[in-house]
Image: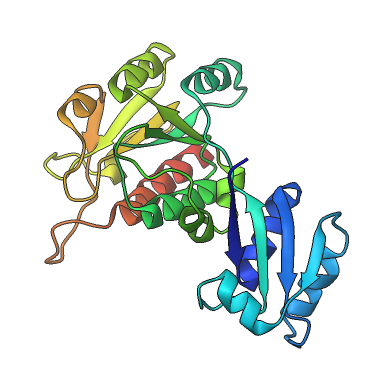
Length: 246
């Protein structure tokens, strides 16, 4: 079992809301009278896990001196899903598939932010590469604010092969590239879809890009050359979400 410690009122509240069964142990500063903490403590009393009183010094030690807001929880990290599980889900989905594909995105903050936006935009799941990619870590879970428990992450060994298979299932592969002419806002995304984002700084690999049915870019009029990958992914997911609502 892969467990980690999370801390802070917001992080523990998200764990309780989305995966209460994953909470294994809780440490609380019983001397802290925080109006935001007290309602959470009442909710946690309904769990069967041990809630242990601890002084601030103990909590500081558990969190390496970080701002814990008087509460620390030991939780089981969400697991990643396999390529076979991805195939099973695609073959049994009732709704049109809508995936986000991250080609070797390595920053856990970016993966966490992508998970959070993916949850909001109704994405079926995120596909990541086994090598040179951020996995599910405590940082990812904290940034995702509960979305790591609600959006499945599928880890694949050979991304180009996976994209070929998705195309065989009538899922369109749309890649983000700054050197293309078509704007994301003029593209038809109202279909079974996998949006592909490249790695920070380098973009999509050549073999990944070759599997895309077409490429799109986000129009920019400022001086910066590119957007953060999680910001760009959020814009693209929401454009697809908007079109799928119609």
